[in-house]
Length: 398
Ligand code: AMP
Image 1 (cartoon, rainbow, N blue to C red):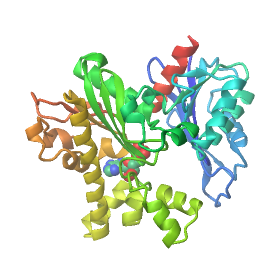
Image 2 (cartoon, rainbow, N blue to C red):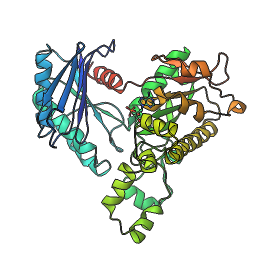
Image 3 (tube, protein in one colour):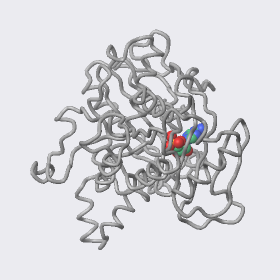
C-alpha cells in the first residue's frame, strides 16, 4: 500500500505516489502557476508515471482545481487514488511553531492550528492548509498526516534557539530560531549513519543542505543542536534568491534612506538577494557558466556563498568539538564538486580533506568523498524528503 505525498507551495503543488517500504515511486508530478495565466503550449500540470509524461494545459484556478486535475491524471495513468487503498496522505508543512514537533494526524483542530501559525510563515502555511483541505475533500476515508519542516529542530538547546532581543517582546511574538529543512537534515543524517555502518546516536554530524534554499545543521548523537535558518527560512547561508545573514540594521536604514516599505524589503531579501541579487541569476549552473565566461559579479557571488558556508562549518566544528561526518546534500551539494572542494579547502589541519577523484566521480549514490582512512569522513548523500514524509506518515498510521 502506497502513500501520496503532497507539497503545496503558494502557486504550485509537487506530489509523489510511493511505497514507503521500498521507496519505489509509482508516479510523481507538479502543478505550476496556480491562479496565474498560462501561456499557450506551456503545461500547467506535468505527471510522470511508468516512464510516461502526461500533461494538462490550461490555467489552474486554485489548489483544489489543481488536485482534481492531478487525480484525473492519476486515473488516466492507471492509478485510481480513491480505489487504490492508500495507506495515508503525507503533507509537507513548513512551520510547526512551538505547537508541532512530530508527524501529526490531521484533524479539524490541527488544520486550525497550522492556519494560526501562518503569521510565522505567511508564504507557506496558508498554501499548506489549502493543500490539506483539498486532499481531505477528495480522499475523505484516507488518514492524512502533517510532517513539519521545523520538527527536527524543536529541541534545539536554549542558547542556540534564543535571539538576544528583549525577552518579553520575543515571548509575545513567538520569536526564536525554529530551523527549516528538518525532514532533509534528519533523513540525510540517518543515511550517513547507514553508509558509515554506525548508529546515529554514535555520531556528531554537520549536514549542509545546499539547494535553492540552503541550510546547515549541527547534530550531536542524532539530535539537532544548531541550525542556520531561524524564525524564517531567510537566515543563515547565502541562497538562490535569499540573503541569509545580514546586519538587521540594514532594514531600518533602507526604510529611512531608500523609503522602502515592509513588503518591498521582504521582496528584496527573499526574492532579489543571495546569488541572484549579486549576479542576476539564481540557478547555480547558470552562475558557473557566467564565472567561466569571466563575469566578475558572478565570481563575487560565488566567493560570498563559499565564505558564508565556511563560516558555518567552522562554527559547527567548534560547537560540536568532535565531528564524525560532514555531508553535502540537495541540488548544489549533490551536484557541484567545485562547491564541495572549495567549502572544505585547506582544512587538513582539522582532519578534513576531499579526495579529488571521489569528489568528481559521476555517481548518484550516497558515498564517501574523503580519502580512505580520513580522520573525518566527508560524504555526498542525495536527500529524499518525499520518502522521509511517506515513511513518517506510514509509521504514524500503523
Ligand atoms: P534544489 O533546491 O535542491 O532542487 O536545488 C536547486 C539548485 O541546484 C539550483 O541552484 C541548481 O542550479 C542546482 N543544481 C542542480 N544541478 C546542478 C549541477 N549539475 N551543478 C550545479 N548545480 C546544480
